[in-house]
Image (tube, rainbow, N blue to C red; front, top):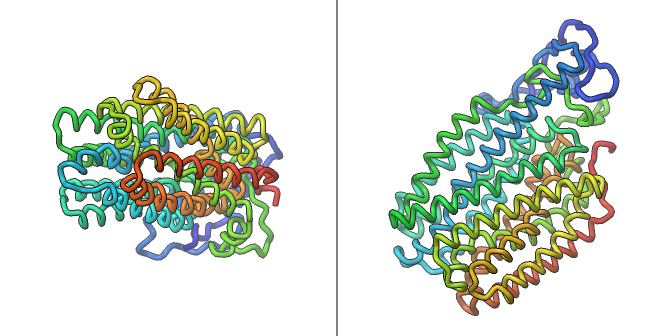
Length: 481
């Protein structure tokens, strides 16, 4: 799939300073930055809806005004994608809080529920990878809105079903549409945010995952407590998703040139005159030939194993192993997410300020401490609600640091030309982890109990720390290549 249609050369305009420092550039040069290769082919007719917004001639000539406009649009992108991606979690992480009641009312086993998580996660990972290729070349707004609407539709069908096969099928399909959520966000951020600020800004954006997962488990825990109907955990979030899709349609832009602004300083990619815009060539050059992106994928497998073991099985673990009330468990999982948001924010700041944008180095510390936190949660917390809450939140703080930073490191190393593809590759590793955190953990706990589950998580934490340590010497980004 290619990107923009050939654009006619704009008429000569007075020189326009770039938004952030650097040399003076003309509007024609700004458009050339947006389309560094001369000829671009149109999308096939049936896919024109996803075609990137064409560049608009730059008419602003005042440097301060350009900076103000870029800051405005950057804030708008951040707010819209934070809200949008949080709501993606409303129609994805609603299953975890409904699982204990589904287990009772429908007679499902932990293995059945584990299969739901595994099939969903594996297809989500494949979707995130495949849609990464498309997301690098598609209109941010069209792609994100389509994914959210389709995911909401599938949630409605899931809520109307009762058979194991039907529920498994719909949740698996939901995994595919969920994979359309992150790629447009990666495209938006690598176009709107300078590489030197990407770790900080995307760690702020990453709060959307914690906000979405935290709010939906609390909301659904109260729906279950007051109405006792697990199907509401899918109907209500789906309604919210439909409303959010309308908001995103009017709030999201595509790239800076699509709103008449020059490219953000630092995001220019060095392309030779004979450089190809073919997506396969770009993917090989910026993603598949970079060993550090593959290593990020391996590290992501271990990070996501712990993350989803704690998140997806959290309500079940807290009610069955720790003997806590479901509403309390919902709030505790929300606390896990809020602490994770804090950990990701601090991790992004540390990566930019202390490690010069080198995400691997922050991840070594975070993964080691995640293992320590899980050990304390297992051995020290007992059945105390407050101690369990404290140690669960501590685990979230350290787990979400690398969860956020691995995607940022992949996007920076691949540059804006292949950011979504790189994140998709690491994502397919991450969501392949549901073979362990889903059916694997379900079978392990069903057979040997929760102690065996905790031992498995500790082994994964050690392996994840070692994988991150192997990337210690990786560069901060790929823009100098």
